[in-house]
Length: 79
Image 1: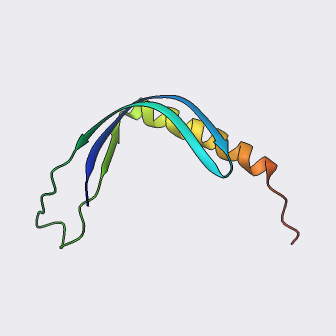
Image 2: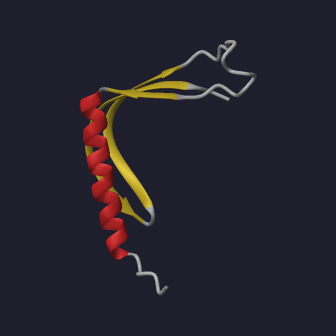
């Protein structure tokens, strides 16, 4: 399994279509060496996504807006 270190630098736009949320963003993606440490307990290596607090807040707000827009179009529960 290939692992990567992904640094999310800027979220430019978000949209949703056909049940998928698409994010246009600037990101630095580099291969992450698959090293195991004592903390891994033999688990598969994981890809790491890192971002600044400011970028995380923007990402969270945009994601909430996209999910709210998606939920508006879904049929209401009949219960």
